[in-house]
Amino acid sequence: MPHATFTPTELLAVIDRLPRAKLAHLPTPLEEAPRFAGAIGDARVFLKRDDCTGLLLGGNKARHNEFLLGDALDQGCDMVVWGAGVQSNNCRQTAAGCAKLGLECRLYLSRGHYSTEPQGNLLLDYLVGAKVEFTDAKIGPELDALLAAKAAEFRAGGRRPYFWHRPRVVPLAAISYVVCVAEVVQQLAEQNLEPAAIYVSSSGATGAGVALGAKLLGLTCPVRLICPMHWPWHIPTALANDANDAAAMLNLPHRLTAADIDADENFIAPGYGLPSLAGQEAMRLLATTEAILTDPVYSAKALAGLIADVRARKYAKGDVVVFLHTGGVPAIFANPAEVLPPT
Image (cartoon, rainbow, N blue to C red; front, side, top):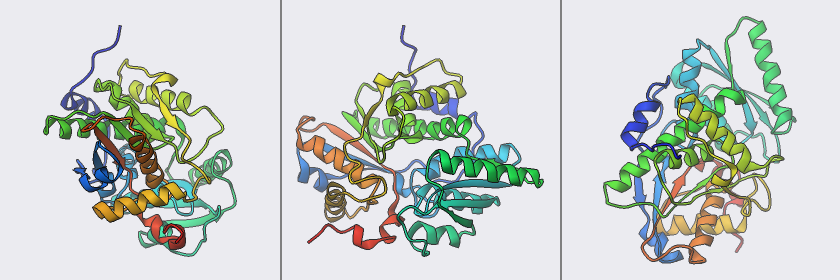
């Protein structure tokens, strides 16, 4: 028998029991994009403006960090150890949250194909006082092992590091996007609207949270996760597990299976961290019709997925399609030549 669903107010009350640091400007606006929608088809497109969360130029990680850094403070930690790519949005907003809360931030950044010159997200890391080291460790198990070793070193030296270890961090980050879905449902209800589909760039905690939020709130529309990268594991299974860990953390009985996760890996090319022609077109179209920016490797590729589906007439005239804009705009300035489509 299916478990009972929640109203947004009921669900937010459950989530409010968790430790949380108030870092983001919430709820973010839900903004209709009529000129953009008219350029791609007959559906109505609404943008959930998580590029407007604040915390050093916005993005989805501001929501994550409300719960993660709230957990760090609750545990009495005095520093955060984290890492990702040189132009990581996650690291930028983690560094910003640490600065705001008085925590030391140590970032270990995988060089990848990006320059280590201070530009884009990396420049902002420095500006808010993060201590940055570069590494050739690849993103994934190799970098995770390095971070675990660094955290152990600090712990042995008497520090109290908060380390982004998967068993706790991913469910907490996912819960932050259950909150986002509750906001969307509330905002649409104020206009007597219901979503026909929700789109977001994710193959991780954000997507797990959106899928879980949809289930807890009783939504029946598809949740389309446009993946920015391939992983060596089965993404729907992994995200269902992450969503279930988040539900368990909230002491809720609801569970997802891989069949509940619509993870689309068809918009990643030419690869993770690399702009695509479809993404460049999506960036330019949204910018020229609505004056809203996306980043080249996450939100633009997800927007390209939405455009492809609307153009394929997957939605009827007037259907409400919601795009969760996860931010990432500072990456535009890391390599401007990659942003503009070829002329």
